[in-house]
Image 1 (cartoon, rainbow, N blue to C red):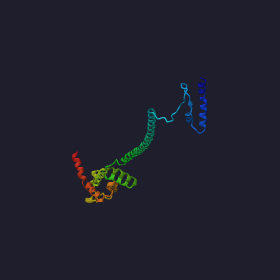
Image 2 (cartoon, rainbow, N blue to C red):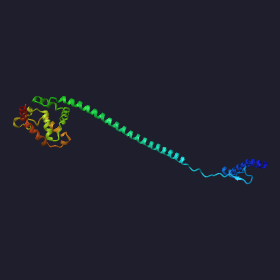
Image 3 (cartoon, one colour):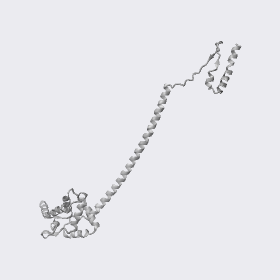
Image 4 (cartoon, helix red, strand yellow):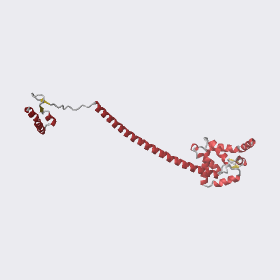
Length: 244
């Protein structure tokens, strides 16, 4: 019995020896393997404990956790990229809206200005169509002023038509009453007043050619409908009265 106790008490000494060996550039686990422990149930022989140093294999549970973490990180990365792209899109949309607002404000301002200008122009030319020589004389004097001339040209340009002849007739109908035109011919034929020398005549040519589509039209393209319109002024007036 005493011998058994002595052997059991030798365990700390064996542990110390193992630790000392580990200090001599050995791992602690290698030293532990050399520890011999006497089994208390068997007096003969010694039983050596062996430690398995094989790395722990990942369990299915650990693999699942790892996969979850990877998916979360991947999702966060994708979310970060999407947020950055959406931010860029929002910035572009904001810039587009700002540009649209600026253009809308400019168009609104231009429209209001044009409306005011149209109102002022209409006020200047509300005497049209001219019905007698006196009114025509007043207009002729005003047309000597370049500003007034340009204003009248802008006003008459609103009568734009696809063809030169249609536009010429529209301008003459706007400016002159049939009774006044009946007193004129282009070159003064049949002892009528000469229309070609009037500032009112030259403004018609300038207005038609102010339209981009008619910029290069010839004099004859304007003269032909002009002469015809004057020649038929008396007939148109009589036809209008007969319908009344």
